[in-house]
Amino acid sequence: MPNTKNRIRIGADVGGTFTDVVLDVGGKLTTAKVPTDVVKPEQGILNGVAIVLEKAGIAAEQIDSFIHGTTLATNALIERKGAKTALITTEGFRDSLEIAYENRFDQYDLMINKPLQLVPHKLRFMVPKRMNVRRQVLRELDVTAARLVADHIIKLNIESVAFGLLHSYANADHEQKIRDILLGHTKLESTVRYLGIEVADALAIIISVIGTLASLTYRFITGSSLSSGEIPEPLRS
Image (cartoon, rainbow, N blue to C red; front, side, top):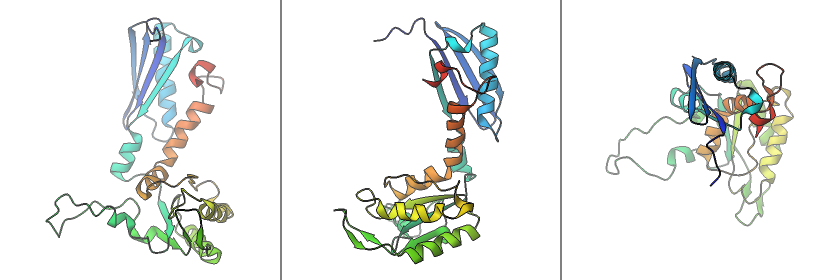
């Protein structure tokens, strides 16, 4: 096992109210708790890191590893404060979210109330097309219908789009064509979340709903800094 006794590590946990940062220098811990910036969550991390580095007299370049965690995504899902998301799916599968695996918390309760879906029925759109598991196109994508869906999404001020097309894991051609149609609309150019692979509808939706938060984290990792506009190399690895 690698020797971590003398390694310098920083851990950051971004919560809905506070951001906690811990600096570990050979087992000696230095901590900071700062308010979370809900608009720019990465700023709370940077503020906390600056505090612990100053307290310990450590330079950012000396850090060996950086560990980041957050409950913002979980909070956004629970509080339903994520991006306004639409789902595009194969014709005939609009209600697959409700049907799911047909599981019920109580299988004998026919009147059970299931949790509300992250994407309501009115924001789910179907496109005529069909792909089979062998990558074969059984029905070509109706491009005209896809363009109408894109027009409707613009009118509804959708912030993020999830794809859940049947068997797109085997052949993503139809997903890519719909993505290109959506990106062809200037107002949607920066909001479309295209996964490139098929995942369960629910997972695709979750990724789309919290996609803005994920992009904030990516921005922090790749483009923010304590001072100069660029994260030191040790924090990138």
